[in-house]
Image 1 (cartoon, rainbow, N blue to C red):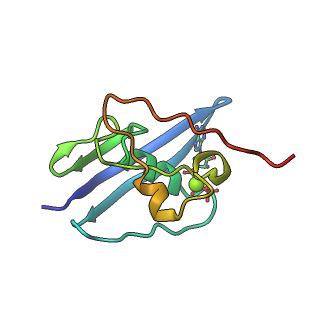
Image 2: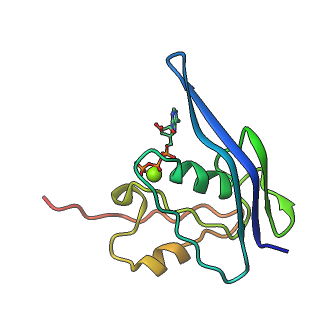
Length: 118
Ligand SMILES: Nc1ncnc2c1ncn2[C@@H]1O[C@H](COP(=O)(O)OP(=O)(O)OP(=O)(O)O)[C@@H](O)[C@H]1O
Ligand SMILES: [Mg+2]
């Protein structure tokens, strides 16, 4: 069984009376230990796809499972690093250390003072 399985996933956004089909009919399987890069032009739906896989957005169509369980909200041990690097990363940490910066369930994230240049 695939670790992550997307089956015919679709997502549309409505804004100002116009509908944007961000994703349609996306099938994807990722095995345990696999590495996946999603590449495409700006606006093709990469972030939408990753946010659906991470349980941050709900697909309009299709299904998403992680280890066989439906993804309806962010699953434990799934880490999503947002695209706005300056706002979402610890700049003094490596990429790996940023991804590893998980907060245990039920605990508040630590407040880390950031010294900004004058
Ligand atoms: N919250 C939203 N409301 C309306 N439209 C949205 C929303 N989020 C994404 N879209 C639209 O859905 C499409 C896919 O957006 P998405 O951010 O997934 O693209 P992307 O591939 O990550 O682009 P980029 O490479 O610029 O980060 C775009 O047309 C975008 O304008
Ligand atoms: Mg993006």
